[in-house]
Image 1 (cartoon, one colour):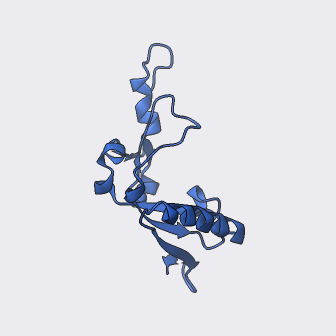
Image 2 (tube, one colour):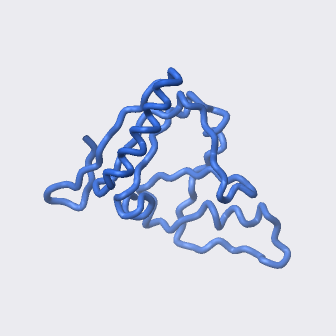
Length: 135
């Protein structure tokens, strides 16, 4: 998933403890994996009829076990979550030092507010396989 969702391993991934923010993460819906495209009537279909296009992926991606939070009119808006729900941050194996520095700056601010700090992990490319491990 790193190469697809974290800018070719240059990004980061947040790890959440769902029980610490049920209000936000209760809206997460499992993705449906299928070999078939969803059928949508673009003329008479409703907004709800578009959900299958948002929540479906090819079965080749089923190993991801992905869930998505879909918020109508939520594009380009931040999703707020309770600070105590953030348990870890995983840096991609090609993350730039500038991003790590920015995250550390934000964590210092978080610490000054008395919030628990997440555990930091670094993804590393496996030496002999197409695999990524965390350390």
